[in-house]
Amino acid sequence: MIVPSARDAEMRWGRSRVYLLSGPRVPASPGYHFLVAGRKLAEIVRRERPDVIEVGSPYLAPWLARRAAWGTAGGVRLVAFVHENPRLYAARLPWLVRAPLDAVLAAYLRAAHAGFDLAVAAGAENLAGFGVAHTAVVPLGVDTEVFNPARRDPAWKLENDAVQNERAQAVVLYVGRLSAEKGLGVALNALEEIHRTTGARLVLIGEGHLRPRLERMARERPEMLSVLPFESDRARLARAYASADLFLAACPSETFGIAALEAAASGLPVAGVAAAGIGRFLEGADWARTYRPGDSGGCARAIVEVLGLDRATVGQHARAAAINYSWDRTFTELFGLYGALVARRSRAARASSSAPSPAPKISV
Image (cartoon, rainbow, N blue to C red):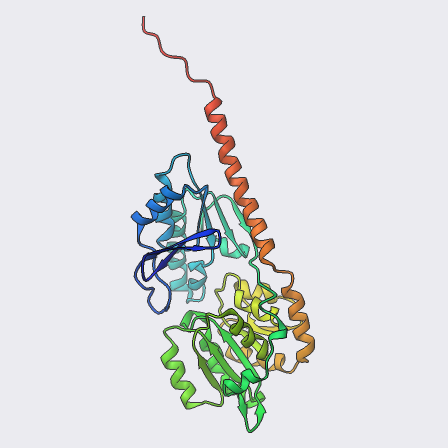
């Protein structure tokens, strides 16, 4: 595994090796770095001699991975795992801007992934524009032992100021980056109506460029909003999910919605945007309500409706839906796809080596 980081390092993780390669920070995204160390990447690829390189970013990484693969003997299969499709961001812009920008992004994605053998995503809509002939849809998974309703703890609300006048408030929980593209503005515009109708508090867990603004809002309206730091401990995060009353899935360009899945596994009903991966995951769910992208009134109605449902019943239904997603299933499907790629390469190599050589030309 090769991970862009603030420093270079190599470590063991079980039976795996993890390489950290230093790169510049991604603006407005704390903890994220660009992969720019092309020479070091090529050295690692030559040393490890992989059969498949899976690329998880559509920006610089595809170019660097393709260049690293060129220097290997026998050929390496290149796979794009689409965690992010930039075209989904452009889709929210006005048409006069959206159409030309979408054309530019589609051309870039095709160029960046030229020569890739396979593109994989959690949803078919995420694959649009990548220009890779072979594609596959593989849903992601959730650890249902870690993310479990049994972790519900009433003390969590007390610890996070969600108890007013000795009564626990309903908590709407958001977990993710605190950045503009995540759709938080829609929920913030709806927050006063949500609080007036239900008395609920919005609790945000994460980091991002909006944090200073959100912290100011929380100081001004402490009864409505709390901003907590990014949580790296999965057990503590699972406790937060299970102890809240509703999860807010606000991002209209989410390719899958792993946080919403973790929340559902924790027995938490969801209010989410009816777009991309979130809309697909919540479609037809009786334990969730959706709203149109950009619709603050719809967001308020969705949250109020979910908070009015029977918490125990919808929590059970959310948990039952999440059980269908397992990491075992995800990796079984992925390794099956990658094994087929390697087998095709081996067959092609054998066919090439067994082909008769052309007869030598004889001059007379």
